[in-house]
Length: 157
Image 1 (cartoon, helix red, strand yellow):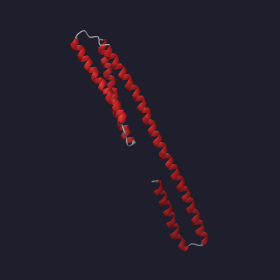
Image 2 (image 1 turned 180 degrees about the vertical axis):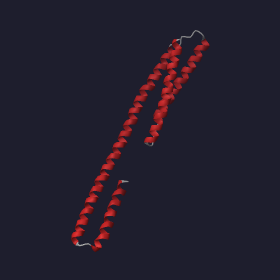
Image 3 (image 1 turned 90 degrees about the vertical axis):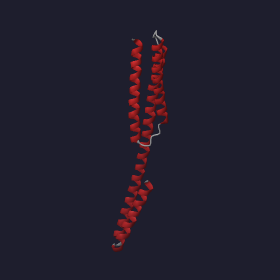
Image 4 (image 1 turned 30 degrees about the vertical axis):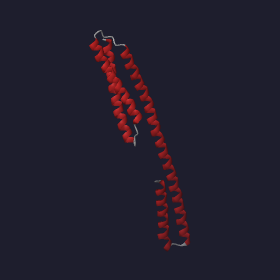
């Protein structure tokens, strides 16, 4: 992309110089050539800056994903630990209540595992896709956290 910009700039300078050179004196031609050189240098500097800006944006995007993934992994591990603690604390006397409770905990565990898989499998293409993924992931994470909290409350009753 930056090469195209550079080519277009050079071509524009050449065309401008060519069309104006027919009726100009040597002094005017020299001034126009100097202006074209300055425009070319400025265009090259803009291309270099734009390339640097694009690289920085890519690095920022990668860092944002890595930080989000790290934070999500911590939350998912907390969920995993909380579910394991709840499974260990099953205190119901009646077998059918205990089995129902364990089944619900297994479902929560599966949801937690699915969130881990979703995070590992994410291969976003652009910032919009990333924002959509984060929104859905956060909603699912909040719903799971709420379900785990409700299960913990039921266990203490």
